[in-house]
Image (cartoon, rainbow, N blue to C red; front, side):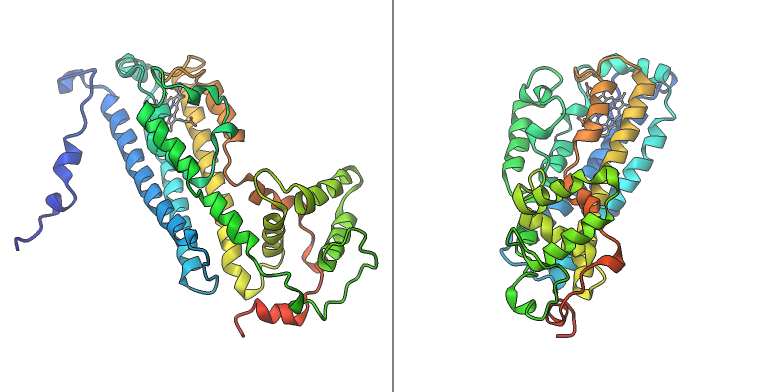
Amino acid sequence: MEDLYYSDYIELDQILTSQHPKSFESLEEGNDEMLFIIVHQVYELWFKQILFELDLVRHIFVRDKINDNSDDLSRVVHKLKRIGKILELINQQVNVLETMTSLDFLEFRNVLLPASGFQSKQFRLIEAKLGLKMEQRFKTEYYKHTRRGSLSEADLQEVNQAEGESTLKELIIKWLERMPFFEEEYWLEYKPTSQANPVDRHRFWVDYRNAYQTSLSQNETGRLKEFDNVFFEEGRGRVPPAAMRAALFITIYRNLPILHLPFELLNTLSEIDELLSNWRYRHFMMVRRMIGLRVGTGGTSGAGYLEGTLSQHYAFREITEVATFLIERSKRPILPNALKEKVSFNL
Ligand code: HEM
């Protein structure tokens, strides 16, 4: 067998012959379109790697039972953290494109019409596979048609299909719902600090709710109603109450050895949301500088649309908002030994 040659292995010729600026032919006429194309290509390559990692994580989670004590969970956390590192890197990359000024951009902006990053199928797939739903998007009408500047029909179909498959968010919810923390055998020795249990709730949660109530300041008393709603009635957003309770429990008792990884997992999901949001912000600010208030090449309102996506396109909002319901460490109910043993590595 012939020895592999570096450029053949990574198919470098194909990559390096894929930059074809449309606004100039000779180097003398050259402008920033080359930079614009290369930066977009680099982004798309990183999007591809993110999708690869995401598919792998979803594949691990799709199994009915993932063992929290095995390699499964540490692999999941490791891959998600890698996605975080890539997002950090692509946030930095905005700096390179921002060396282009708005006048530099105007030199070639018209040649790319009506193409736009709005048509990045891979970006939409990342959002969909994380768990962002169409109806949750800012200005959903932009996504519903396939006219000039929008996603092609085939791309939109692929995004819709990804949204309909098990998204990471749905898999996380199922995993949270499976948490065995409240099986009665572990709670026999629990010493409740509250007397009454008017709504037939687990005595741990009655105690926790009381502690939460005393932690609220006067102008926050409405939060108690919210607590009941989030953890015992409707849940929050698309996360049902049982999964919200598990997420809160993991967050409060993250010092227990076996909850380290589950906590890392939840924390990394919030981090991914935050880093993606940082990217949206950097991109939005860059767009303001480049085109001011003009409409985008993809036909949206431009910066206005991008600003709207900032606060609306979180995939794991509910997980991050668990922080609303935390209490101080010293006020946490003391867990019974049977449960501590169950959730420790010393079994
Ligand atoms: C001069 C630099 C850039 C300008 C002026 C710009 C402008 C815009 C505008 C106006 C939109 C809104 C859709 C539209 O109407 O066109 C948009 C969306 C988008 N752009 Fe850019 N963009 C730039 C660079 C980039 C880069 C480097 C990427 C990397 C892939 C990118 C990816 C995206 C994505 C993914 C969207 C969709 C965002 C969403 O819907 O949440 N853009 N861009």
